[in-house]
Image 1 (spheres, rainbow over the protein chains, first blue to last red):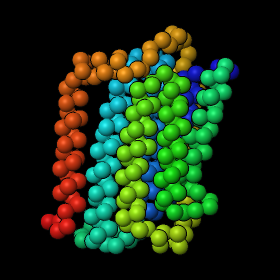
Image 2 (image 1 turned 90 degrees about the horizontal axis):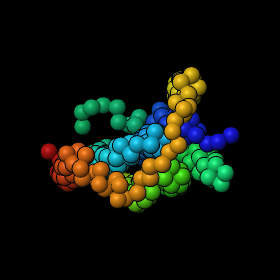
Image 3 (image 1 turned 30 degrees about the vertical axis):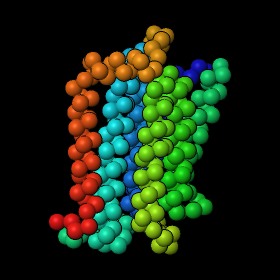
Image 4 (image 1 turned 120 degrees about the vertical axis):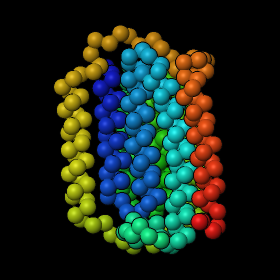
Length: 101
Length: 168
C-alpha cells in the first residue's frame, strides 16, 4: 500500500495524543512543557503533509512561523518557570495551586 | 518503494521516542525526557525530508534540537529537579487522561476514515527548498515575517525582565 496523506495524518494524530497524554498525566512543569512542544510538532507534521500532497507551499511557510513562535514561547515559558521556582522552590504542579505568591 | 520503508522507519521512531518522552518506564528524570524529545524531533526532520520540505527539516534540527532543547536542558540543570522521581502518579489522573486521549484519537481516526482527504489529489511536484520558501517569505508573507521579528524582540525583552533578580 502506497504511503499517502492519511499515513502522515495518522502519525500526526498519534503524536498529538501522546503530547496531550503527557500534559494531562505528568506533574512536572518542565515535562508538561516538553509534551506541549510535542503537540506543536505534530501540528507542524500535519501542515507539512497537507502542503506536500496538495502541492502548495503556503503550509510550509505557516510551519516556519509556528517554529518561530514556538521558540519565543519556550523562552518566555521557561523564564516564567525559573521565576516561579525562585519563589516556591518547586516545579511540581501540585505545589503550585494558589495564585498568590 | 524505498521511501515507503523510510516512512515507516521514521514514523515508528517518532512515535516510540515521543512515547518515551511522556512515559519512560525506566527513568522519570526530566533529562531523559529531554534527550528523547531531541530524538523525536530528529526523526520528525526525517519525515520532513520525505515530504520534500528540506528547508523545514534543517530549521527543525537547528531551532528545536539545537536552540530549544539546549534551553530546556539549561533550565533543568538550573532547577536541579531531583525529588521528582519519588512521587507516584495518581491513578485517577491516569484513567481520566487515558479516556480523554482515547476519545480524541477516536475522533481523529474516524474523521480521517470518513473524509479520506488523500483521494483524487494530483501528483505532488512542489519542493520546499530554501530559494522558493525565501521568495515566498519576502513577497507574499512580508508583513507576517516582520510581525514575527517584532514578536521575537518582545519575547527577548520579556525574558530579560522576568529573569531579573527582584521581580516587581
